[in-house]
Length: 134
Image (cartoon, rainbow, N blue to C red; front, side):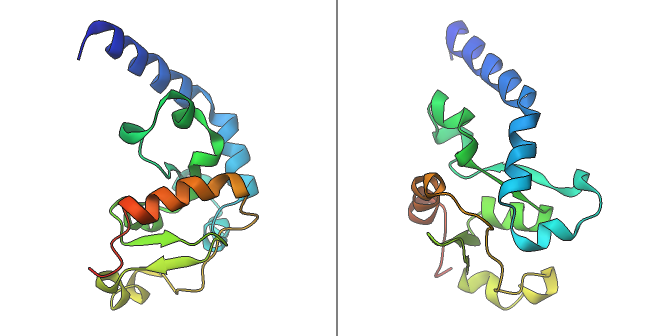
């Protein structure tokens, strides 16, 4: 990695961390239902839908490339055990299905007020990250 690329990455990460109001807006607008039940928002994670490493600079900062998720959903989403369809309904992999209830995942979750601008990122996630048959 050259110094210019490192500098750009460092700048974008700082900018991303500095955009807390963007993630706050994201949280208020479209978390999955169960995330709203947390009384302490420190347990909510702002997650990129299309990973930072696979995103260009505009996608990294796009508020529609993000979801506000609880830690269990965040981890399951990140490793491809859950995803969401274009209407925001949760999709659960076969691998997770038998243990989902133990983790509090009901299969009834959905993203509230999903914007059509989320759809290209969710489509990317379903095609490249989600492992439905594992």
